Amino acid sequence: MLMTADARESSQSAPAQKATRDMYIPPARKKVTDGGTAHISAKEFSIYYGEFEAVKKVNTDILSKYVTAIIGPSGCGKSTFLRAINRMNDLIPSCHTTGALLFDGDDIYGKFTDEVLLRKKVGMVFQKPNPFPKSIFDNIAYGPRLHGVNDKKKLMEIVERSLRKAAIWDEVCDRLDKNALGLSGGQQQRLCVARTLAVEPEVLLLDEPTSALDPKATAKIEDLIQELRGSYTIMIVTHNMQQASRVSDSTMFFYEGVLVEQASTAQLFTNPKDPITEDYITGRFS
Amino acid sequence: MSERPVHELIKELSGVLVQLSDKVLQNFFESLRAMKHQDTESARKIRMVDDEIDMEEVDLEERCLAFLALQQPVAKDLRTIVTIIKINDDLERIGDLAVHIIDRMPEVNAQMLESFEFETMGMQAGDMVKKSIQAFVDKDRAQAEEVCALDEEIDVMHRLVFKKVTKLMKTEDADIDELIAALSISRYIERMADHAAMIAREVIYLVTGEIVRHKGDFYENLLDSLKNERD
Image (cartoon, rainbow over all chains, first blue to last red; front, side, top):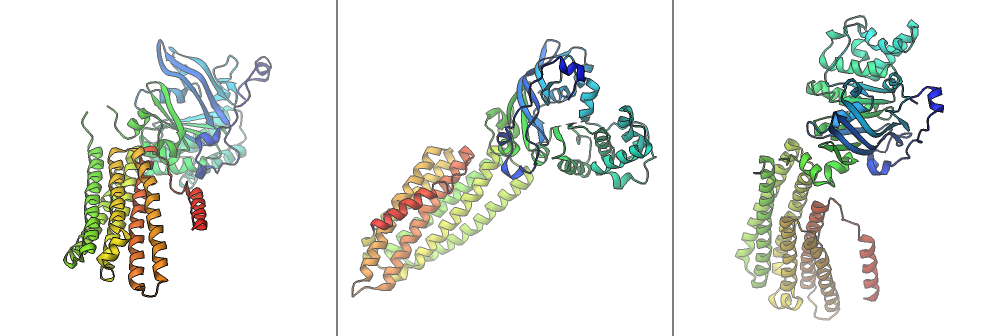
């Protein structure tokens, strides 16, 4: 929950949306046992940069513990939508929203929302790996320390668990005190995933996480997404449609700020319902 | 906007499939003609053409597999390539059926062929293949559904041949070898119509994305059992 207890009492939050998993999840991928409820929901949700409506009245449910890919041409609003989920757009002065964007039924843009708590629950990994110029250990321990964990033993546990989850422990366990900037690009990106996991988020937002990586490092990140699937709700923005089809359960296609189509990934890539989606994914866009 | 090379390539592969279907059909009609006239020279040519069909089928499949690996198509592009691969397989089987008919040639005579109306049956089955390929070219679901419906007519013809052969076998002067050959020819033509219906179902998948194979089996089986009871 995103609000303080006092704030919660004074607000009326909507209950979490019930599952519509059959709409989005192909039977072959129905392996997540306790996921499938709407973790994030948008209702007539628009995002503006000044007068310009970058995301237009989006209605959607993002199912918990599944991987949702967001695809679309440059400037279609997919990254803007992703960044709205942990309020990264707050940093842009002219940016404002209308409608509702709900996390577990709470309005992300509600008056009483605690942004720090929100960003703890909704972690983000960016296009370019951005480790802090600190040791590997300190990179991972940074978040937990910020949230009040100072016990060394406890921190060590968190660091190891996070690095293991991000499938990088074996590569760095003997050099935790070394500067993270000395790692390769692919390792740095997995370190950033580990840093996000260290504060135990529920949602992972990945904004083109492999666009700066070589094919081998990309494969490792894709494998990692598959491993984390079922434990976290994952949303990934990608320009690589093969990547979207490989890693996601559900895919959203944005065009000119409009959510044109959302379907199971298998459905969207074999038989999309909207001709604009069809034209985009088959490369027939003029 | 001009087509992208990738889409030109899909058109090209579709064109190769249509050319192959022309060759297969021509060979099939030629097998009916050769059987009617007991033309052994044509029979030899039919076998040679079938060897060419086999090679062209493999070549087209290899090109489609390379396309899948290299272009990684999705949506209608993916469905088109998958459909080409499947129709290609059906055409190769139809090609084999023409050779099977020729194989039976020494065991049959013109009078018998006429009495079983194999030419009519064969022409109708050939027409179904032609229509199913046209449905592929036009991406026409209605035309494809029409072909599926026509399959029942060929099945009825095959059942009539079966009944007639059974009856004749019970007569004293029955030439059992000849009657078995007749039954086989009927079966080959009926199989050809089945392939035409399969091609049509693949076209329905191409157009709609829905796999309609087996969906009607329950009712078809029910109808069959009722027919058998009546017979």
